[in-house]
Image (cartoon, rainbow, N blue to C red; front, side, top):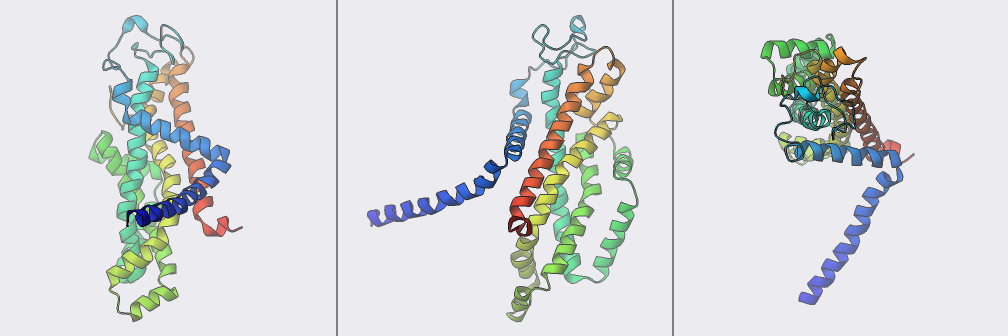
Length: 297
C-alpha cells in the first residue's frame, strides 16, 4: 500500500515539475520581463520590511547634516534639507506606493468585476445606470476627479486609497461587462441554461473564469497608473502628510533645491520611473503569456 502510494506521489511529482517549468519558461526567455519581475519583488520586499531596514529616527531632523551629497558620511543617497537620510526615506516611501498601487487595483477589481458581470449578464436598467456612470466618469480627467474627491474626503493614505478606488472601479466594471456580453452568448452558457443551472452558478462557475485573464492583465498594467496618481496627489500636497515620506512629496520638497541638491528630486523620481516601467513590462509579459490570441501566433 505504501509502495503504491509512493509510486503515485513520484508520478505526480514528475507531472508537476514540467508544468512548473513550462510556466516559468516564457518568463526566463524574456530577459526584460525577468529583470522587471525581480525588481518588483525586491521593491515589495523592501516595502514590507521597511521598518526593519530603516532606523527608527529616520524622520528626525539633523541640521548638522543638511544637504549632504550622495556617498558622504555613510549617506548613500545624500540627505535632505532637514538632514534626513534620503535612501531611508525612499525605502519608507515605497510602502505608500506599493499599498496604493496594488491595493487600489485589488479593491477596484473586487468592486468592478461583480458589478460589470451583473450589468452584462442581466442588462436592463442596471446596465443603463452603469453605462451612464461610465460616461460621467470619462468626462472628467482622471487626476482632477481624484483630487476633487480626495479634497472632500480629507488627507491621508487611507483616503487616497478610497479615492482612487472610487475613481478606478468603473473602468474594470466596463471591461467585465464587455467580456460578459461576449461569453454569455457562447454554447456552453446556453447548455448550462438548458440544464437548469442557477444564474449565480453560471456567473461564478462559467462566466467569471472566462473573463479573469484580460482583467488580470489590465489590472497589472493599471498598478503603475495608480502609483503615478498617488505621487501626483502627494506632489500637489493632498496626499500623505509629513513626516511620513512619499515619493511624490519628496519630489515636491526637492524642487526648491533642484540646482543645489539634485539628488533630492532625482532619486525619488527615478524610483517612480523604474517601478512604473517594471510594472508595465510585467503587464506586457502577462498579456503575451495569458492571451491565447497572442500566444498562438
